Image (cartoon, rainbow, N blue to C red; front, side):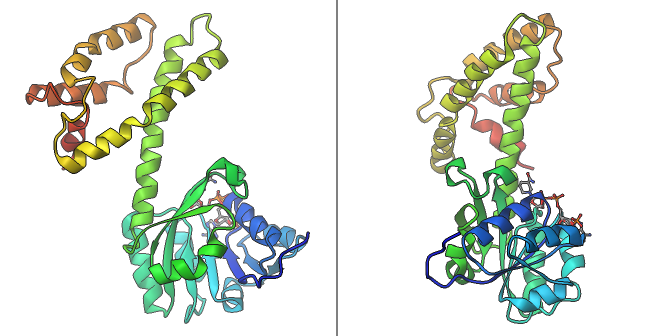
Length: 293
Ligand code: FVH
């Protein structure tokens, strides 16, 4: 493959699971010298045949380059893998899914070992890596200087979004966005269950469902505006009183279709509680406050 003549930052990558392997291939394709290590060596051997240098140990891989990216199963595996590595002077970028607390502790752990630290939350699945039009990106938090220094290299696999100096913010944004995704999947599961026993083509229904979810998605901006202003009635067209009045329709329909309402009921309960507090002219934003402990 032909590469441009700009010198490419060498990268060390630890962890060649589905995600690590996808990341590795994009750096190789873009002409970055790449040193890899994986607990199960066969995965590194496969990449060596595509141009990567396969290190014998994680410590050897870390010693090879300043920029060290880790993409492992969980935070515990990061500690295991880097236990014997000298991190002095290294730019450690940790793309392993973690909690915010784990990410903050890992940043401190890296600092104590002489490394600079960036945490990353991957908002993509492996097939989206190296496919710009797929819209995947990685959320980064931690050292802003480190992010700027490696922005171009880190932007090779997917887009980059810096979300703050607090090392835990990438993980927090990651978990928040994925939590919203699970809410969407939960609602979709209920919707498919409602039509499941009928003579309705799931594929035709999926088109309607996808379009509807897409049309509703911009509502998050109204929520954000209300959270900023503190006025939860701002711009409301579908007020809570009307929505709570509709709940029996949803529950009866579920009953009639032989579908458990267990995915929807907790949300309906919160809507009712908020209405009972006298918030009938609001939309759904007040539910957020009920969740805060
Ligand atoms: N794949 C996905 O869809 C998601 C998308 C969003 C981000 N996640 C996170 O990315 C991290 C890596 O995920 P992955 O898909 O690469 O995961 P696996 O294919 O299961 O590979 C896991 C790698 O971790 C190595 N590993 C696990 N435990 C240890 C350990 N104790 N010591 C050393 N290495 C360990 C494993 O090695 P091996 O099994 O090949 O020997 C793989 O390299 C993850 O945080 C996702 O949440 C992916």
